[in-house]
Image 1: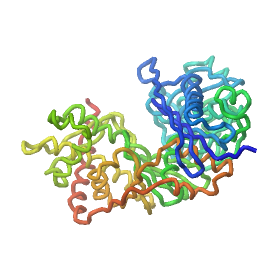
Image 2 (image 1 turned 135 degrees about the vertical axis):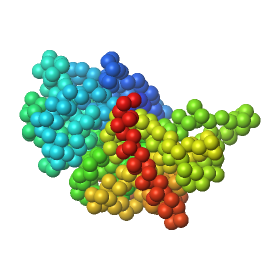
Image 3 (image 1 turned 180 degrees about the horizontal axis):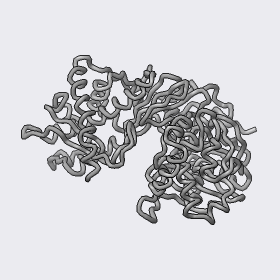
Image 4 (image 1 turned 45 degrees about the vertical axis):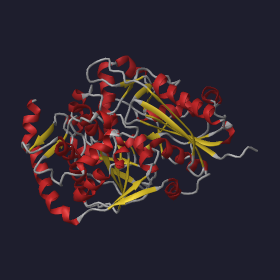
Length: 507
């Protein structure tokens, strides 16, 4: 009998798909990744072809991992996927998509339907039921949009799936969706009932049996079919873990496995989440279930983070030619070093980081970036550090929303490209008062997906084993002496948005 000593995890993202093949100890033996496009046939629309992008990329990554590693497919104990979410694709009885998949909050077609459902159900009802208000992230308005605008599709729909549920169907022939990815889309998922919400289904005009069966991401739901094995190159009968959302598996890969844990993700979009043992309703924040039945996740992703440092690099930074031509030149390390020479508070300069609007810790598509307090004495270095501090203030805002709901994190794990900056991680600790455990590299969503597969297959014993897959880089401690100044500036930061919100909408 072939010994099963490998796990495969694949993530289908907004613009990139990637995967890893790992040992049971978390050592990567192969990785692969591909880019894909977002389709936007009309203003405000964001779509993927479910067959070509979601399933097509899954198959492509599978085959690339197998070819590169040379591993016998029969040695793979389990496969699992994570995907962008919340998403929506209607399929017929054979699982064939009836239209392109509609993406998460970046797709804004259903604004009228949001208003209709808000009047019919009320915002308060949606928040109390699902923990999330009605926004462009929500699934119910997208279903209602299909009903109102594509009646043929609506009448032919057998099941409404998301990206991970569609891939799971392609692998196993089963219509299932995990609680974690179902919950982030708000109603029709009920976090109170851990199931589908009948009043929302009635408001959307669909039946309960048109939604997939709800399962937990660590449940065994079946194996790869003969047809899927032929397409992917994997072995028929390989265990399949239920697909889930990319944020769920990324948090798992960070060791985010128990109540009280918190994570800060230093990515293109910054994110902060706190792990709780009960549903925590926090206005402005998202609530979702995690991989595990006893854990909830509250928080979410801010729309800007490292995107601001890239904007500065591309538009305001300048470097000597000799410096740029150096073999080890890294523009961000250079900029961070310069920001480290500027005192906290940037000599009275405060920025608002809402260059793309904001969705966490409040939802405002009209929010704008601001530089406030500019004087002739300020330099590019001050502006760069002010941007770093503005993101730290946004993290503190999110943290306070959770604390006001009565929950304080006990440990903080930091990951992402931005953690390479000692200056930025120190600013975040000083502004928030958080002690951060910075990981060298968590490998993100594919790693978390692979680990889930190992749990489902029974080759990994217990969720705590993920901690053995990660390696600590450093601890970042807050400086008590920085607190008074940052407390004062944070108050101005909060009032600055409140006092300019109406003007932002005029722009």
